[in-house]
Picture 1 (cartoon, one colour):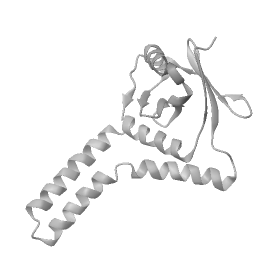
Picture 2 (cartoon, helix red, strand yellow):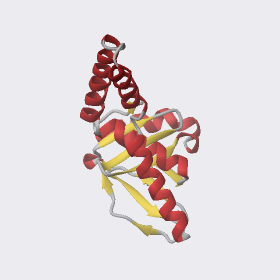
Picture 3 (cartoon, rainbow, N blue to C red):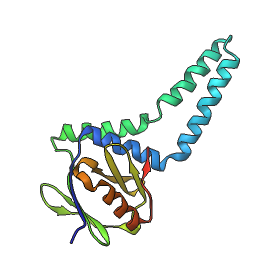
Length: 170
Protein backbone atom coordinates (compact mmCIF):
# COMPACT_ATOMS: atom_id res chain seq x y z
CA UNK A 1 0.00 0.00 0.00
CA UNK A 2 1.24 3.50 -0.85
CA UNK A 3 2.05 5.87 1.98
CA UNK A 4 1.30 9.03 -0.04
CA UNK A 5 -0.47 9.67 -3.32
CA UNK A 6 -0.32 13.05 -5.07
CA UNK A 7 -1.64 14.17 -8.43
CA UNK A 8 0.01 17.13 -10.15
CA UNK A 9 -0.73 19.10 -13.34
CA UNK A 10 2.16 21.28 -14.53
CA UNK A 11 1.75 24.92 -15.48
CA UNK A 12 4.21 27.44 -16.89
CA UNK A 13 4.85 28.58 -13.32
CA UNK A 14 5.54 25.07 -12.01
CA UNK A 15 7.99 24.41 -14.87
CA UNK A 16 9.80 27.63 -14.02
CA UNK A 17 9.87 26.81 -10.30
CA UNK A 18 11.26 23.34 -11.12
CA UNK A 19 13.97 24.92 -13.29
CA UNK A 20 14.90 27.36 -10.52
CA UNK A 21 15.19 24.59 -7.95
CA UNK A 22 17.22 22.47 -10.38
CA UNK A 23 19.64 25.40 -10.76
CA UNK A 24 19.79 25.91 -6.98
CA UNK A 25 20.58 22.25 -6.29
CA UNK A 26 22.90 21.35 -9.14
CA UNK A 27 24.63 24.58 -10.21
CA UNK A 28 26.20 25.68 -6.93
CA UNK A 29 29.65 26.20 -8.50
CA UNK A 30 28.13 28.43 -11.20
CA UNK A 31 26.25 30.45 -8.59
CA UNK A 32 29.38 30.97 -6.46
CA UNK A 33 31.46 32.05 -9.47
CA UNK A 34 28.71 34.47 -10.58
CA UNK A 35 28.52 35.96 -7.09
CA UNK A 36 32.30 36.41 -6.79
CA UNK A 37 32.54 37.92 -10.28
CA UNK A 38 29.59 40.20 -9.59
CA UNK A 39 31.13 41.48 -6.38
CA UNK A 40 34.50 41.93 -8.11
CA UNK A 41 33.03 43.93 -10.98
CA UNK A 42 31.02 46.15 -8.64
CA UNK A 43 34.08 46.87 -6.46
CA UNK A 44 36.22 47.53 -9.55
CA UNK A 45 33.54 49.87 -10.87
CA UNK A 46 33.28 51.77 -7.59
CA UNK A 47 37.06 52.22 -7.40
CA UNK A 48 37.24 53.44 -11.01
CA UNK A 49 33.86 55.17 -11.15
CA UNK A 50 35.39 58.31 -12.70
CA UNK A 51 36.28 56.32 -15.81
CA UNK A 52 33.60 55.33 -18.33
CA UNK A 53 34.41 51.66 -17.98
CA UNK A 54 33.99 51.87 -14.19
CA UNK A 55 30.28 52.51 -14.69
CA UNK A 56 30.20 49.65 -17.20
CA UNK A 57 31.85 47.34 -14.64
CA UNK A 58 29.18 48.22 -12.06
CA UNK A 59 26.42 47.59 -14.61
CA UNK A 60 27.89 44.20 -15.55
CA UNK A 61 28.30 43.23 -11.88
CA UNK A 62 24.65 44.10 -11.25
CA UNK A 63 23.61 42.15 -14.37
CA UNK A 64 25.42 39.05 -13.07
CA UNK A 65 23.53 39.36 -9.79
CA UNK A 66 20.09 39.93 -11.27
CA UNK A 67 20.29 37.37 -14.09
CA UNK A 68 20.97 34.34 -11.90
CA UNK A 69 17.98 32.38 -13.22
CA UNK A 70 18.14 33.61 -16.84
CA UNK A 71 19.21 30.22 -18.20
CA UNK A 72 16.69 28.32 -16.06
CA UNK A 73 13.90 30.69 -17.15
CA UNK A 74 14.87 30.27 -20.80
CA UNK A 75 14.67 26.49 -20.52
CA UNK A 76 11.29 26.55 -18.75
CA UNK A 77 9.80 29.04 -21.22
CA UNK A 78 11.14 27.02 -24.17
CA UNK A 79 9.50 23.82 -22.89
CA UNK A 80 6.20 25.63 -22.24
CA UNK A 81 6.27 27.21 -25.71
CA UNK A 82 6.96 23.83 -27.36
CA UNK A 83 4.05 22.24 -25.52
CA UNK A 84 1.70 25.06 -26.48
CA UNK A 85 2.86 25.07 -30.12
CA UNK A 86 2.32 21.33 -30.43
CA UNK A 87 -1.12 21.54 -28.84
CA UNK A 88 -0.10 19.08 -26.14
CA UNK A 89 -1.25 19.60 -22.56
CA UNK A 90 1.23 20.30 -19.79
CA UNK A 91 2.46 17.11 -18.06
CA UNK A 92 -0.02 15.62 -15.61
CA UNK A 93 1.09 12.84 -13.26
CA UNK A 94 0.14 10.81 -10.24
CA UNK A 95 2.94 10.09 -7.76
CA UNK A 96 2.67 7.06 -5.52
CA UNK A 97 5.12 6.95 -2.63
CA UNK A 98 5.52 3.35 -1.54
CA UNK A 99 7.88 1.49 0.78
CA UNK A 100 10.76 1.12 -1.68
CA UNK A 101 10.22 3.60 -4.49
CA UNK A 102 8.24 6.40 -6.07
CA UNK A 103 5.93 5.30 -8.85
CA UNK A 104 5.03 7.88 -11.49
CA UNK A 105 1.92 7.43 -13.59
CA UNK A 106 1.43 9.70 -16.57
CA UNK A 107 -2.12 10.96 -16.89
CA UNK A 108 -4.60 10.75 -18.50
CA UNK A 109 -3.32 7.60 -20.26
CA UNK A 110 -2.11 5.78 -17.17
CA UNK A 111 1.33 4.89 -18.57
CA UNK A 112 3.69 4.10 -15.71
CA UNK A 113 7.29 5.28 -15.86
CA UNK A 114 10.14 3.28 -14.37
CA UNK A 115 9.89 3.46 -10.56
CA UNK A 116 12.40 5.68 -8.81
CA UNK A 117 14.00 3.85 -5.89
CA UNK A 118 14.53 6.19 -2.97
CA UNK A 119 18.24 5.30 -2.99
CA UNK A 120 18.51 6.77 -6.52
CA UNK A 121 17.05 10.20 -5.67
CA UNK A 122 19.80 12.72 -6.41
CA UNK A 123 18.34 15.84 -4.82
CA UNK A 124 15.49 17.23 -2.72
CA UNK A 125 14.35 20.83 -2.72
CA UNK A 126 11.57 22.86 -1.17
CA UNK A 127 10.05 26.31 -1.45
CA UNK A 128 6.86 27.79 -0.01
CA UNK A 129 4.55 26.07 -2.52
CA UNK A 130 6.25 22.81 -3.52
CA UNK A 131 8.56 19.94 -2.77
CA UNK A 132 10.96 18.93 -5.56
CA UNK A 133 12.35 15.44 -6.01
CA UNK A 134 15.10 14.96 -8.60
CA UNK A 135 15.88 11.70 -10.40
CA UNK A 136 19.15 13.26 -11.54
CA UNK A 137 20.47 16.72 -12.35
CA UNK A 138 18.41 16.81 -15.56
CA UNK A 139 14.91 15.95 -14.37
CA UNK A 140 12.67 15.97 -11.37
CA UNK A 141 9.15 16.06 -10.02
CA UNK A 142 7.08 18.76 -8.38
CA UNK A 143 4.90 17.83 -5.42
CA UNK A 144 2.52 20.69 -4.52
CA UNK A 145 2.30 21.19 -0.78
CA UNK A 146 -1.38 22.10 -0.97
CA UNK A 147 -2.12 18.58 -2.27
CA UNK A 148 -0.68 17.13 0.94
CA UNK A 149 -2.93 19.13 3.25
CA UNK A 150 -2.08 18.58 6.91
CA UNK A 151 0.31 15.72 5.97
CA UNK A 152 3.06 18.05 4.71
CA UNK A 153 5.32 17.48 7.71
CA UNK A 154 4.76 13.71 7.61
CA UNK A 155 5.56 13.70 3.88
CA UNK A 156 8.82 15.60 4.44
CA UNK A 157 9.88 13.19 7.20
CA UNK A 158 8.91 10.14 5.16
CA UNK A 159 10.85 11.17 2.04
CA UNK A 160 13.89 12.32 4.01
CA UNK A 161 14.03 9.05 5.97
CA UNK A 162 13.64 6.94 2.81
CA UNK A 163 16.22 8.85 0.73
CA UNK A 164 18.72 9.66 3.46
CA UNK A 165 18.71 13.23 2.12
CA UNK A 166 17.22 16.47 3.37
CA UNK A 167 15.02 18.96 1.56
CA UNK A 168 17.03 22.09 0.75
CA UNK A 169 15.09 25.32 0.96
CA UNK A 170 15.64 28.06 -1.56
